[in-house]
Length: 498
Ligand code: CO
Image (cartoon, rainbow, N blue to C red; front, side, top):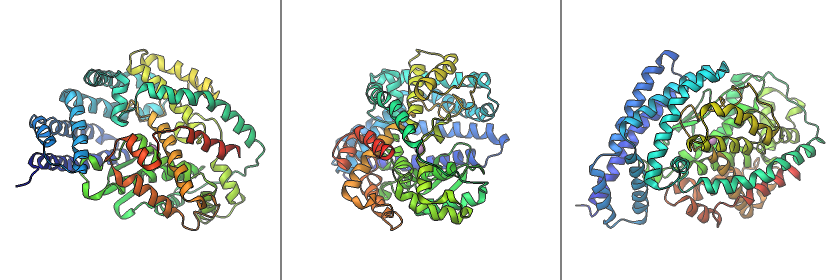
């Protein structure tokens, strides 16, 4: 008989959850990519049923005693880390009643589905009606979780995506960013006004963009034997580690959106494909947190994807895909990829203005969850903050304002800060990498295959580590320190003012 019978039972239960979760992830991917409109209600019901089943398995009464017994068993370090994560998931699941979990899934499916047409129609009032349900349930959830964890309501929601992070810490990090970012944006825009940038001349056929995106994803290490690239309204990475589903979207007048979107999702995809295989199905194999996940997509999209070296790699591939033109000369490609322009859309934002979009959403959603504001207050706050941070007038434009993202319609409050935390971590990883391999600075580094060095470092320090360590421990092991936002600022100043 095994010396760890309780732990073994827990591990077997997690494997079952993993298999059912796999089917849920595929159904969700299909919902976003291929499902016909009239399938929406049935799919919503099916996913809610699955969510309820998974919740029941997560809250089985026998688990409490099993976890307590497993804690007394002779486990090795990895098993102990797994047990810590099992207990964490169990605690979160047990705070929420099944009825709330099911209601949350239904409200999110309904709101998100209607949101697609409402966004297109600039229909804020219609959206606000469905969104009221999503917010009401999120507030209940935040309330229950916060009582249980003795933290603020918003902190309880962030913890689902970014364990250990708090609103107080975000206020400190983002408060500092808010001081230096707007003046830096102005300085960079002045600096860039001297450069001539040749605009690419389209149209860029979607089929050619798709072929280029696939080629780039392959080059960046994505395994197409264990994943796909498809089209969705809102790009995401889904599926399961054994079968990762990336999505992007194509506009024939602009290839950068699909290309850089694909580079971003490929970063997520490589993390997923390289999680520790022998532990798949166990919580310890999961990606550490959403900020660490975004640190991978942003290491790809921002640190690598907008470097001078990447522009050199990309230039001939662009000419091959769309025909030669002056815009595809390497220096010009780099200027295109690093041009700073305040815009309305977060996912299209450049590296420098992106954090402003995140800070704005963070401030609004935190106040929403804490009950300091109501849905009707969002548009005016949005207008005010866009003007303060990026000097943009957004009045009356809900489509390109608070209706632009899928996060709120689907109830993902607490997620947005992870993007900018991820950008900070990505800068921190890159600082280590550049210390170890200074040749990565050279324009032709990536053309000559130094990408493998980057992947090796990420695989060893991030991907293969799963959730073995806390986020702070992971950061210290990889870079010698916990999150240090100074690397992000130094990176931006070096890249954009040099
Ligand atoms: Co991402």
